[in-house]
Amino acid sequence: MGGFIPYLGWLLPLAGLVLVLLALKRISDETGKPRIFKDFLVSVIFMAIGDVLFFLLGGITLLGSISKGFKTIHLGAALLAFLLSWVVIMIGAYFLRMSFNITAEATGVGTFETSATLIFYGAILMIVFFHRGVGSLDWKNNWGCCLFLFARYIGGVYLSM
Image (cartoon, rainbow, N blue to C red; front, side, top):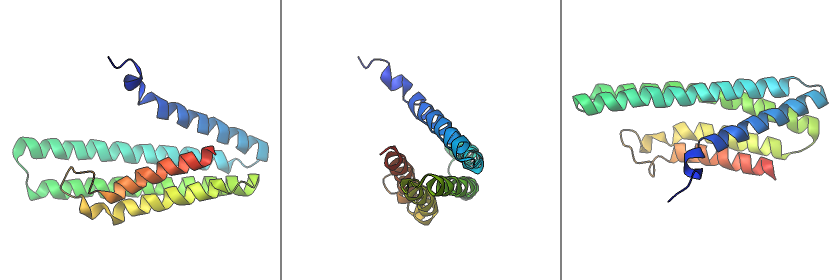
């Protein structure tokens, strides 16, 4: 049975992102601090590029390892793809933190600063704990990625309060 909701699952986070962009644009205009919106927009762009790099390069590496048998070069390529995407996501997390800190300062709402800190440290922990999942597709052992995704979720939930 199912219905149409499972097919729209990718669209709902995108709609939420657009709403956050619109809200931060309005806060930016109302407070007269254009860096709030600009830093958040740069953050979204860098994080999207990092996600695309991770899945694109990781997918190419995975397909190459399946078609030609897993070799050491595939592990090296996967690690390089992950490190490259991690650096790009860290840049995005830094800009998000800057945007939310300015927003917290301008509005007096400390939850912006707290959620920015959670997301930023979650991005850092993604690399610290990644070693447990290198070379496997077992996401239960990949604590860094799980913590980063959890921090993104908690940051968003904490902001919505």
